[in-house]
Image (cartoon, rainbow, N blue to C red):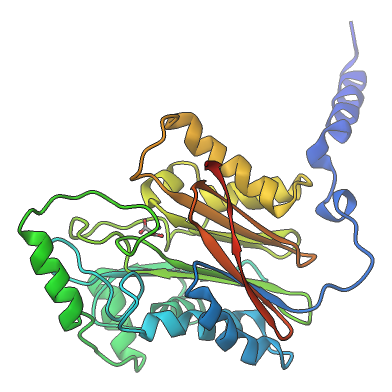
Length: 323
Ligand code: ASP
């Protein structure tokens, strides 16, 4: 029979041998400093990256950069899945969700907010000016107005027209890779080597009033750990929430997985529960690690992400589980 001391020594040795006992830096060592980089979801990420780069390229803070970056699609009336001009819920209300997270692990979030365009900036205010992480609905709107955010009708004539057309059948069916659900998730590493992220969306078009997806949920739509990396998601939020998607991706990078491998593992967890290919089930994960390496993985072909570093801004096709 082993003594208590022997048992404790044995347990200590076993723990030390486990892969998670390694730090991220031990499992993915790097010699040179990575330099600033920003990545974001979908092709509208290109323009958003350019706005973020104005800050990152001059040595600015990653959090300032991502909020400026996602502010572009938030204000774009032609983008029907984020911010102003977003498609409404089934009752005709445009309700927005967003969150941010910085290098200190601080987080802010808002959900189901009406009449405010820049909800990622609002999420940052929640982080900086309240003792809370998340404000929702009417309370979030009241906080926004008290902090000088203008009140704006988010429903554009085009989105209203699309909604009235939808009302004729009122059939809810998400369609992969098109505008009835897409989100901008943006991750940045600044010149000082610090990571931040933001995620902002109008969520699923024609959702039930009050529905909140993954995008404003820390650990689902966004997660940042400054020792390891950051991840964000887009697609059918319900499936991302059920696996705590972005947190899974960051934890896999901590174990030494590349950003793409980490995203693939998260996608496979969703596939395990939904093994049959469906045209209404798209989820894409995007990740950036502490070394500036990036990668993505999605369920269905068609998810793209934009990467800007220096003068180069490029669009990359994410690898997919189903061809
Ligand atoms: N993930 C978002 C949501 O479920 C929408 C999207 O990215 O397509 O609300």
